[in-house]
Length: 366
Image 1 (cartoon, rainbow, N blue to C red):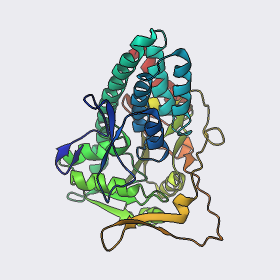
Image 2: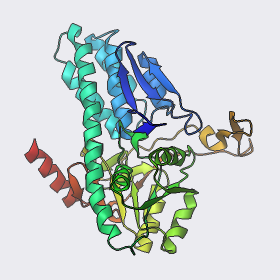
Image 3: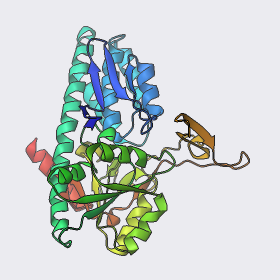
Image 4: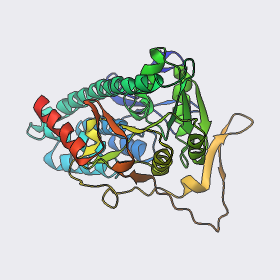
């Protein structure tokens, strides 16, 4: 990724300071600041407060956090304590558990004196793998975009609608749902992105920030505008990310995704989900009623942050104090509404059979 022309990843390790580097995403797009996380408390706070967010990035940051914590205490008792504290930060995204399991498996049989170094090495591997995985997702999604562009009149851009932020700010680099868009733009394909605002955290602002930095044409819309645009033929495809996908192809993503999928289904607009294989929870046969849905602080709904006329970031209350707010952070889109799943291993049907074929392919490649 590039910000103001400089190359970045969304997480990095500064060996000289022995710190995990991140962007404070709670300040974007209004202010660009980096943070140095040097202990477990800071890492857990960064994940819970959404200074870092997005399933793949949460997993990578947690892996580095595990390594940082082991530098202070690498005893057997500490392994369980560190794992539990990081695991409890966000309940919905499965990448968190997946990354912690990878690090834990790499260190558990080692003597305590060797655990911290091995954990850090494993975290580096996970971060590098995420970059390669997201790039591959982008390649497979690019093939879909190319096929859809062929149906458009010459000179007209392909209009793509996305919800929440599934770009490089949600991963180590490239992103999931946005990776095919970046690949298409870089290949000279004319694309235009409808960016859902994505209340209450307004993560569409992060998507708009990314697209602007990359030079991709885009327009921010309110969350409830997508169906209208589809009815009028202004959306050629939808593509979103996911925090957890079940073995039958159900997809758990940011609240509001389900409504976009319903609108797309009603209007014959293809609805794609881009995801790393690590986001699949093979232990769950279905999503609705089975995936734990995070309920966040109601203040995220009752208040909103922005920039005032003086250029200062400020927060204001939107609703009266007598009104309660409920903040369900995710919803589940049934597999029947998903056109295909775009993974680093290829494109698969969102179904029991499609996921089984993916699993077989992965086992054969192992």
